[in-house]
Image 1 (tube, rainbow, N blue to C red):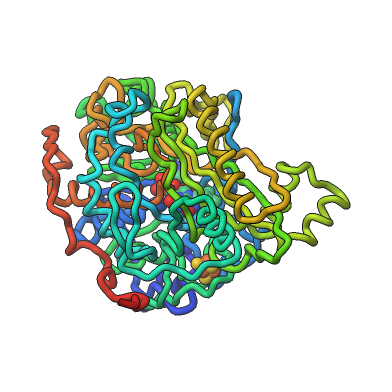
Image 2 (cartoon, rainbow, N blue to C red):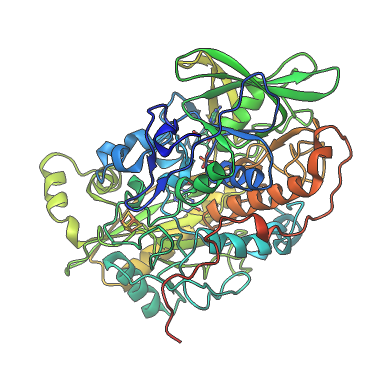
Length: 578
Ligand SMILES: Cc1cc2nc3c(=O)[nH]c(=O)nc-3n(C[C@H](O)[C@H](O)[C@H](O)COP(=O)(O)OP(=O)(O)OC[C@H]3O[C@@H](n4cnc5c(N)ncnc54)[C@H](O)[C@@H]3O)c2cc1C
Ligand code: SF4
């Protein structure tokens, strides 16, 4: 019998500390490489973490392969902006097009927990309209599933993370949150003030996946503002602290620092057989599996499918439609910064805590389809300095003066829906990375509707900033939240996976992460990605072992698997005043 000190998560023979009060004190299962396990999951991020937890709790043999490390939050994380770069996926990517995307800190994570380690944890649901954009507006695409299919999983995730928010949230499908909202910080106060002056409805204190009261072993938020640096105390939800401990307790293995390089396909049986990976010592190895789920995010997922091209799948795996890599999306993420005479101190409080979705839906009075949200951003000093360099050309003594003035500035984010377009695309470049793998080339262009939406949205956010009392306003154009590039759909000729994330082409290959989203709304995508993962897991569990060998595609919604949730899901949180 192993003891806690035998746990090898990062191969260091120590227990993993996940925040000040938690330890993963279960021995981790180690599967033999020659053993054919049930599921390999590529990437233990937002979706991968939830899948790993559900499938292991249901009794499947499952291994999560993760390119980055298994973080020990006590030792590896620091409350320091520049010291946190190791949380990001900084590998070489080629970016191009008329509006090239920036990667690194702004877009993806690396390590157990994936992007949820450094997300801000805003967790609004998508609106019912997001699932039928084409039907309603004649643009974008419809999803193969509807809001009502995801609703029970939104409800579960809001308890599992859990999400703190107002008792009544009026937008989309109106609902309330069981966990009390957070108090507002300076940046939140300015957004509330601006919206209120203009008669714009505003949600205060959430929805955000940050504990407003201690729950189980996790302490409540202490409002120190380092959410994007990983939240050392564990108040912010990441799958590292919410789902991975239960996965390990239920027999899942995580092989960290292991980069999956190729999925092995067998033309004769039209099935995948397992994955090739490069381990922490640089050796190439193979793991057999009955099924493979790719959860590597919007760039790495299509890259892996394309890099796995082989005899019988010459254009890349699951790519008979030619859509792998296409319809990549980012949200417009312009940051509008305003200077106030009074002190704002935007570092105090989580950056994510106040927002409005008043402009989310298509409005016939505007000359574009779909809409946007306005959210608090609250950059720490280094991020603020970069924003002021981009937004106001601050440099040298001018930048020093701006930095001395940091406590007087507030920052709001526009979060605008950019429509899917086939030319916004991930392909493979001829360049190779440190593993010898072809690196992704990403093309990104804004189209007419996107440009009109961004112009309108920027002006609206500036109006709100002015109404709040800002005397000087500048803005930085940027993008946030990559999704798409392996989209789900009913038509195998125009999508990669079906409504249960099963690839149309190969019955035992699944893709489940942000890359399957056909459209993205103007809500942050993390909650939807995790809800989709929970629904996919329920589907796989309900199919049992026949999914490994059968080609039959049963499109029947599974029962909602409440019994597979982590054990502290229905524990209480901060008391709410009645
Ligand atoms: C600064 C920032 C703030 C954000 N704030 C929010 C927010 O407030 N709310 C919100 O909803 N979203 C937010 N997001 C976005 C959110 O983090 C992502 O949408 C989400 O994490 C994506 O989930 P995923 O499962 O698709 O991928 P990820 O969570 O990125 O997980 C993918 C994992 O796969 C691993 N991986 C990839 N390829 C391989 C491979 N070949 N082999 C092995 N491992 C591999 C990666 O290392 C990674 O750990 C933010 C993102 C950033 C950058
Ligand atoms: S503000 Fe709260 S959630 Fe964010 S890092 Fe600090 S304790 Fe964690």
